[in-house]
Image (cartoon, rainbow over all chains, first blue to last red; front, side, top):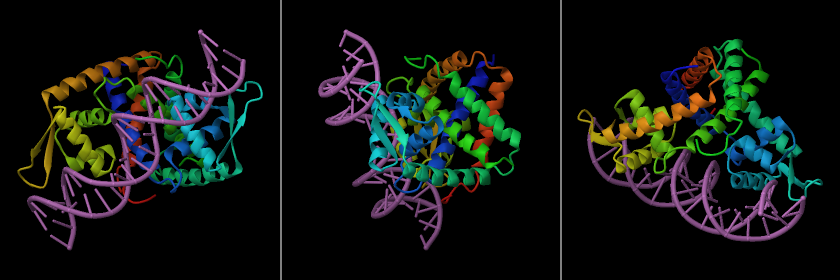
Length: 147
Length: 147
DNA sequence: TATTGTTATACTCTATAACTATA
DNA sequence: TATAGTTATAGAGTATAACAATA
């Protein structure tokens, strides 16, 4: 287990990553908001989802997730259909238009990442990716309540 | 150099880290906004700064940085004095009250990180921290313009 | 003229609370 | 009663553009 100074440093670098993300998001095509991009990406990654699952995955309030969904539906990027098993629930799925939009953004983002990280080794890219995934999963359980 | 699929995965995990950060920030003490917390942290880390430097470090628009500063000054957490060398410029520095506030938040954040990452090895915590720092620095140069 | 910083404005993001419909 | 989701509202975050002061 690491010591306090290491956690301080980790916390600080989490902010730094936020700066990178913020910068990346500035390049989204006009008309595509950050939230819609996030919804499309999560749906692509996890397949069809209920609103509650999307809420969990985005780690936002349910009301926020609901509004993101409404926006993405209005743009024609996702479809919101009734869940036959539980009529309170909705099933969200990517439309072809949504997939096109996502593909375009992915293409651009991947390109800029490749450009910026040209001097990174394979191992470092993978290492960072894996550790970030593990970080997320360390926060996945019992994430509710005040800390 | 990594291949496209690896960058896609990296991009996806950047979002996941955003979820973690969002969750962490929800625990800030009432009255302390995310932006103020960021300003205090950067000032602590880098020492006295000019507004332009803060803007760079936070990777936000200058107008946003200016407003964050105004808020933190209003709370008594930072001081905004004139730069004797260039009277257009301002020097920002932490006040004792600002340092107290930061210490309290750091304490809490460090604690929750330690709790969540109890099963991480020293090496993994350090590895993630270093790679995130390197990611940030890979975006530091020529960060302007559209990508 | 260019640079540093601020203000005005508009839009997006986020959480809380109140609500509807279904279980 | 509890749960899934939506809507209303208010506050925080962000970018663009116009501006003032200084270099």
